[in-house]
Image 1: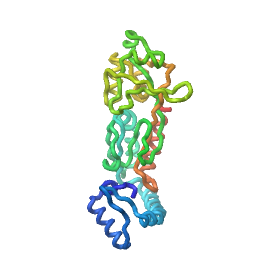
Image 2: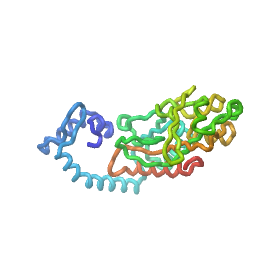
Image 3: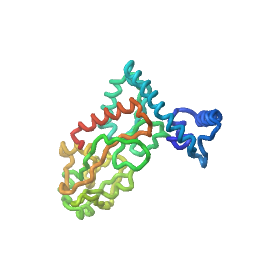
Image 4: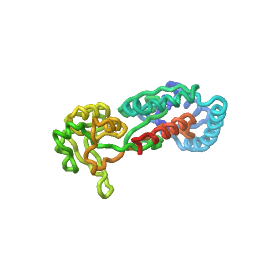
Length: 287
């Protein structure tokens, strides 16, 4: 019911589609009633299935909580946890946090995959994703971990040759280094004087699918760029990049944890989300 398809349920349960279909059919036979209507690969729960789920969920939740509480008390977190996160954030900041979490929970197996593109959690068999930016209405559960300010920056050499923009109108006169993975990234977003969002279309001479590649292009003096502070922070501190257009206020980027809807939330998932929130909120660049 929660996955919407047999294949999605099979991926979540780490079973084959044929096994899931057989179990559904066996349950329908035992009940003497249809639980799902099938159409074009999707399943829609019947009224009987909805009523059954309402009555089963509280009992199932209590059973899962009891088992997990007992396991936690006896041997800590167990099982496996698969996590996907953006490349730069993962390597620079999540890696140490995940390593510490793995050290604290030696009986928990972990799979970590860094990927800048958005991946389907169910098809990819991921328990958790860390995502940067506004979240679409996807049906996933989410928790904001922290907020990352963004900065407009360039190399000192570029500013010396071309000057620095001061207003929104000035931006179009500069070579821009853009982000490739999100189409809307070609429009830089700012907080207006009235608190509204103002978009400025930018033509990027160079685009890259990774924030650190964008930073490197900017340090080489090839243009101005709009970067998350977690990527630009060290280069700004060292002087290899300088912050420009200080009067402009780029919209900050929320950094969130998302996971497939599950009730109750597994204890291993709650533990890793709490750990990441504590770690990221303590970073010098985090808001």
